[in-house]
Image (cartoon, rainbow, N blue to C red; front, top):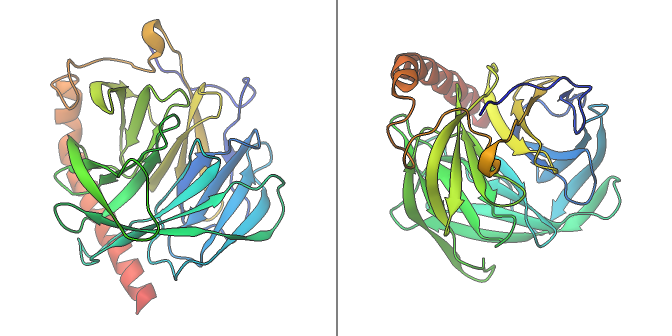
Length: 306
């Protein structure tokens, strides 16, 4: 079983460059369900707005401003649910758990693509074991349940939200599994696989009975600031995004073999011992480069807030 990069001319959504000069910190990426070939993205430090970008041209085809929510602190993730709503995770916490709560915003995916203002619902989120920094939020495409993966230098955790989010109270997310350092994640359209990416790698997990099953290596491109990942709407590719002006979204086509997995190699269980040599070889570089990236980003964001 292999994962191979597909050329832009291949069937399905191509890789693209985000052309909009307003999008300089693309932190999340999600394939539209209503508009083939379109991807939702957003800046992390911004007003409450998201952008619809056409993968064929890289141009923004709609800017959606969210009404009825507070001032975002650090929007890090975006996902489209089976209820036809776009979910935005204002879940970043660069001060290592200083916020007592974070937020998720949700709004109906527009039927037509044009600049508009929509009424959005704001959900208050807390973690059962205290505040966490996080950059990955995923909505399961079949059950609609929301999951968040926290980020720590020595690894993070996967958190499960309530069966149904409520806007009238606090939504408590509970830890269900350990995961590596994660900057974003995405469910496959059929809901059978969860892919989590970090700065230097990505792993796929079989999704079984509401939790992680066996895991496998997934090919991911090396990007300057590896921020986001989304399955294409048809499930035939992974789209990897990064920050920066005119940032690139790179397509990695999935050569799916037996069982529909996008795997390259396998381990016996989630977080298990597969790919041991690869993990060991990457560990030192990951820690050093991730620490450097964290220092740069932290300084930049502190200066901006100041």
